[in-house]
Image (tube, rainbow, N blue to C red; front, side, top):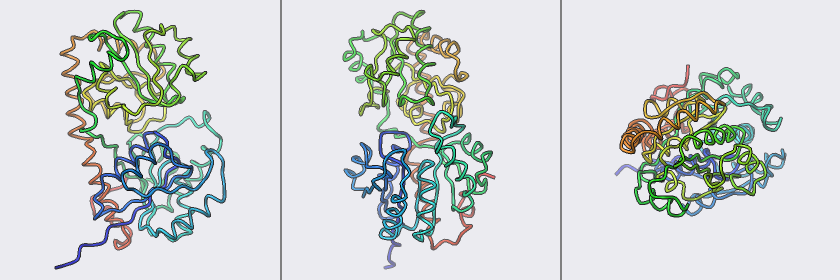
Amino acid sequence: MPCEPAPVLVAHLITSLAVGGAQMHLYQTVTRFDPRRIRSTVISLVPPGPVGVLLREAGIPVYHLGMAKGVPNPLGLARLVRLLRRLRPQVLQTYLYHADLLGLLAGRLAGVPRIFWNLRQSVMEFERYRRTTGWTVRLSAWLSRRVDLILVNSWAGAEHHRQLGYDPQRLLVVPNGFDLGRFRPDPEAYREVRRELGLDPDHLLVGMFARFDPQKDHATFLAAAAQAAALMPRVSFLLAGTGLTREHPEAAALARESGLPPSRLFLLGERQDIPRLAAALDVFVLSSAFGEGCANAVGEAMAAGVPCVVTEVGDSPRLVGDTGLVVPPRDPGALARALVRLLSWEPARRRLLGEAARRRIERHFALDEIVTRLSRLYEEAAPAAPAGTLAQAGLTPLA
């Protein structure tokens, strides 16, 4: 009998394994690859966080380079070169700007046959972040012709990076996929979360799950929530994500300044039960001001059968289609009006819109389909396949 081909060895390099969209995308894909076809190893620049624990529990080897967040360290490059020479991956897949740049340098020094980048952002406002981030992006654009492929999770991100100077012949859009088994409608969760929060069973609940970061624009969310709350006494608001607690000085100050009564705002911080919280919402919001690619939180809420209100940033409008409402960024009034519109509907009408949102995810963004596409991509790109065969495999870069 003919022998089955050996699995393709893929090393995944990421800036950190804290809880975040890129990290959860990495976790959800590598844990679903068929190990007979794709064998994965994960490397973090900094010591692993919660996602690293999940990966190890799933049997995925996890390494880290001992670097400190935001502190350039030449030793990290040397450690990565040594590790790659020991692991000998056929493909090095990197995630996020700093790992992209470090991975290219180390991968070429270590002789890795194929190097892929992964871009997760669209139009960023780099002046809001460390100066080194902007430098990293500009240098990466110049070096982008040295990598084999650049995966992008949104069309908006692909176009923006093309304008920044990234090689368009290497840009390939592969959107995020969403776990329809983990995120699904759950009437019991809808009731349980209200009991835990001390709310009546029919009390309306609006939520957003996103780390406290300028990109997510919690100020606009809170200002819109205050306006909607003034018109609708039976609605409360829920925020979850890193930094979203009353102990966080900036988040607490924003909450106070919004004028939203504290009794109608729940700041839950980082949570491990997001699928349950999503299923408890009547409306999900993503108020991002810039930078979104294909937003995980939106797709997950849609999979849970929740209608969404999103800002016109990145691929969020493309993601929700006609199953939600789209408003301009940084416009609390428009966001408040959209919320009041959906919350004024009868529950049955909102439920129908949520069902349409879930069907849209099933049809266009199911996780299993994205995993299959990525698996095929790595197999076709393995060293046995000569350079230039990606288009022949149906994986046509952005022209």
